Length: 137
Image 1 (spheres, one colour):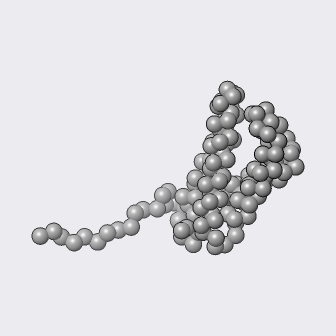
Image 2: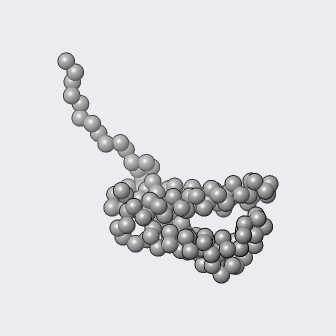
Image 3: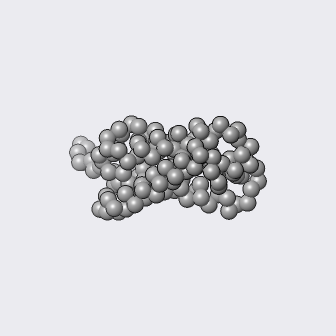
């Protein structure tokens, strides 16, 4: 006869954050800051993002689309509730960062150009993994 065992819930990813919510908020602040500042700079077509986007071969109107999306993501990530929108915001930020890294690689730019997008992709993953239960689906 099989013994019934009590199932334990899986351990949270990087459980230190559950004991230190400040770590979640610090990482999330960096992600939100990048989205807010980067989005504003995109909308205003400011250096360094706009010239890089053009050098990568993207049309100028993409700055308006990306800027708007980044500002929306920043807002969604900080407001309470809106769990499903937060998932979409995290996905959008990751697509932006992975796309930026892939674009730099595609045009054979120096590997140093990968530093910022991969670092922010990593911070985005940490923010997503460390988010409290109240911010999860």
